[in-house]
Length: 402
Image 1 (cartoon, rainbow, N blue to C red):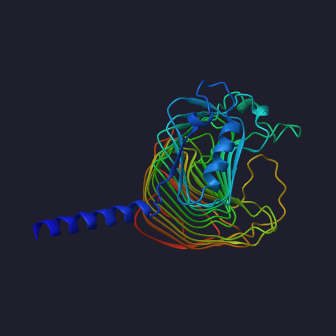
Image 2 (cartoon, rainbow, N blue to C red):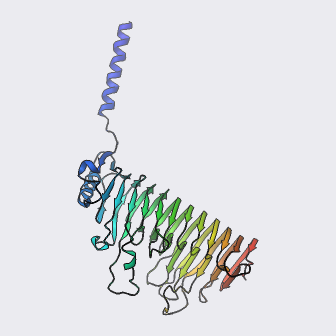
Image 3 (cartoon, helix red, strand yellow):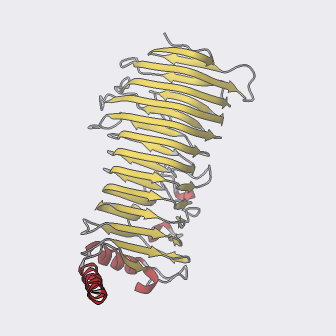
């Protein structure tokens, strides 16, 4: 009887082993870039190797794919990673991807570009080194019509249900990360770094995007830490440290035809340290687009020596003189600012200059405490033009709402 039981047990284990062995697994197919021809000498252009690896990973069937960049320096000319893919792709970067120092060696407007992909993951402790120092003096397109267009570090177009976690972007030639028509995207634990005087090095820029979550991220640049443009909706930003830079900016908006509404923004538990601006909305004096900016919440925001902690500028003109075509036709409404505190280097700590034709509506200030710590003496002040709203709680400076 004992013998029969032992045989039966062994038979069951054999059947179970066969079932497990025959069952297909969904383990990622692992592509270490060095094993597929990439060299970490910091000189060899690995663009072709990376493109070939992407094609294998993207088209693989029967399970997800993982592309791994180990420690080392991988020089990379401009590359495009294009879908759609037959599986989910994970891109793990532990080494350094090095851009060409000469901006003319990147032929496209983005150094590393992802397009038409779902379920993409980019992670690791590695660095995207844009080598932007040689390019920044060439950023003179406002004065020079024959200027060379500089490349952004990494771009995403028509990429959905995806994420970036943990990587560092260093010294981009122009913007660091650019997002166009991207939906359901998470950005966490990312570090973005460029000097405060590096021109147009926006940290994160979004247009026609939705359901974006940004958290636990440090951004220091020469332009906007985060730029939110036409058609972006349902964005949640939390635990971001911004500085240097121009703050978290909505806009500029209203200059071009066919722009779309910007709605549903929450910014919370965030620090602006030594930035030019903090909370910022900017629109042109133009009737090109009649759009809505609405349902914004800013709460638990610390300002440390910020030049313009809170600013709405509906007469935006970055390089005067600007052609005034009309009062701004961008309607700003349903804006709540709660527990905004810290120091302002500008005496005007709250500056709300709205459109005469489309005044700001339902602006709510709750517990604002911004002290003036600039060279000019005296307490902080507030300026209001064409604003309808309310204020309650502690109010420094004294509010100027109707």
